[in-house]
Length: 482
Image (tube, rainbow, N blue to C red):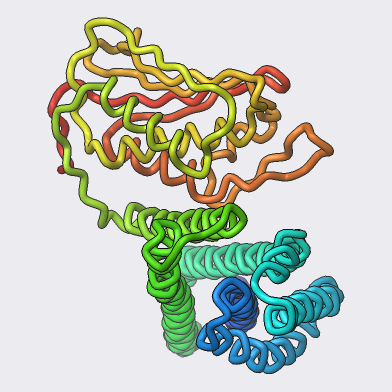
């Protein structure tokens, strides 16, 4: 009787664990399809963003120069946009929230294309001055801001869904492994119980033979169950490998898109610099302002592309640090001069405070200069012109072998609940002004990775309405990692 009960329990346990494993395998397969679908949506969103940018660039270029080749990317993008909006609409049919955003995106894109077409017609009929005046009204910028906002919201939703599905897959895998371990332990206990019954029944030959037959049958069932567990483990491993390949494809796609952006940006910036320098003829004040604005936007975008590449390299451990001795006041002075001459200029005044007797820093001058430029640019964005920004350095009070560099402002400040996410990639914090959300983009992420690559630490202290202070530490002795 006991033997039969143990056998029944073993079968129930095997069937139960098999069912759990099967259910979790199905969940993994389903999540894999959902992750692949999400990646397709993200690809379409990025393609639409690229096409609308090409259309805007072509229209602006033609408005400023009147040269026909600038219209080629405009017309090409205009044709392709219709083809990409339809599959995007189809892909998000299963998500009512995303599907409801597509009409708004289509409307914003059509509005932007209509304004671009109007700019081209004004350039053809009234000349460059009228086209520049129309561009200066800012309607195109408002259209692009609306498009970027919708694309950003849809991309954020898809990324959130992908993260949720990846977490669910990991939980399913964990449950399957746990079920396998429990099944194995329980089976071993059951085998021991059966063995004890067999030994105790050896006094009766008939009972002994019967128990031997039952034991043989149970061993066969255990081997079958073990084989099923091995098969299920193999399937889980295959599913995990597919998920990893999907992640690698996503990273490769991101790297490809970033590299593809650099070439047209560089091609765009070169002629703009020639125009600004007067190499192609004299420009009036309005033309110089437009060229400067376009050149600044192009350089900022190129900087963001380079920053994304650097962040990817640092995350992959491919960024090399060329550490050398440098004076803190020199790197700080260089950062201040760069910011003053860049697109951040014209904001709150910047002052420097460098403590006495600070030894040479041991760091990569280029990376640390970029860290300070990013922190200063961030401070200028959130500090009114009547405020004050201070950048400086002094010895770390807790470690004489390290220097502490800082950028302090009297701007809006950061809400306490957002302090922990300011260094996150594409993180957002809510400002006090009308509750608007400002993206920290990749600048602070780059700062964190660059400082930590030097073996240092970076942090922020802030109070709402009083300003923020960013600190980071660097060694004043040779470091490893160059």
